[in-house]
Image (cartoon, rainbow, N blue to C red; front, side, top):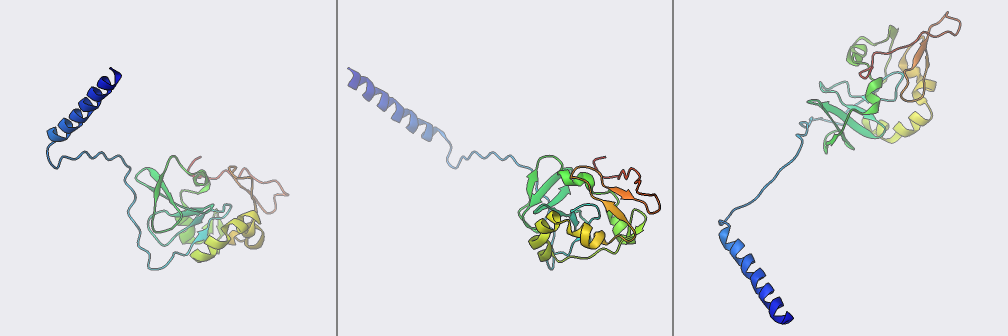
Length: 190
């Protein structure tokens, strides 16, 4: 009896499968797409030169209109209220949920500082760094505090006191006998 029931069940299943195939119209297709629009690609004639922002280890690409940042091995860019990151400056952008932590340290007016060669009232002789040098050295430069110790980020007459990541750096004024002012920056997250 069990064999008869299994046979009937198999016959019923095969019949149901054939009927479902015959009922679907020819060429019918089901297509569901869920996604987030990716930012448009930015065309570079050559890999971009970058500038490190003082008091941070955030690198910017100043020669394009869109904000593009390099931080901790990733390329970052905001677009239409979202953030995207990539291992390459010119392709493979993927949506990033939230705002990257480094962005709180980037002053809103960084482009104006760049154009004026001025960082918070002090002369800024920034260094344009080739893309490949940053890609190869960013980790060691950050670990060894290269820009602070060797170059002072290109900012003249200043004694930046780099704090732990996530805290605002302070500027120590000359003639202030070691008492720094609050140094509250106006980053994007503050």
